[in-house]
Image 1 (cartoon, helix red, strand yellow):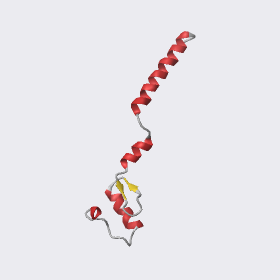
Image 2: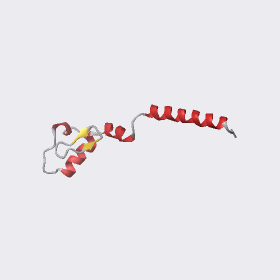
Image 3: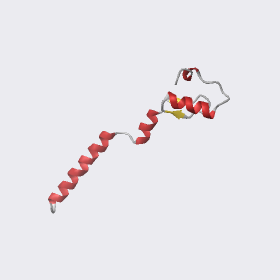
Image 4: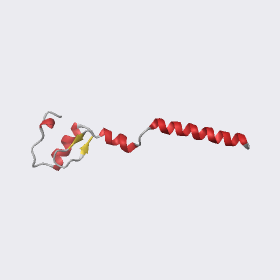
Amino acid sequence: MARGQQKIQSQQKNQEKMAKLKKQQGSSQIGTAAAALKHSCAVCKSQMPDAKTYKQHFENKHPGKELPAELKDVQ
């Protein structure tokens, strides 16, 4: 076990190391998740990650509306 000055130096070194790691990680999960939502519903403006999910959403939540052109060829 380190004692005295060694302990303080070790703690400072560890703090610097952790600060570098945190800086490298960058943004939080919220920013990453928001970037993954690429499609936005034309009617209710809710966001979806892919076209297939968007089509399912549109068919279930807006059955009376006509399907948007970008979703007509999605399986």
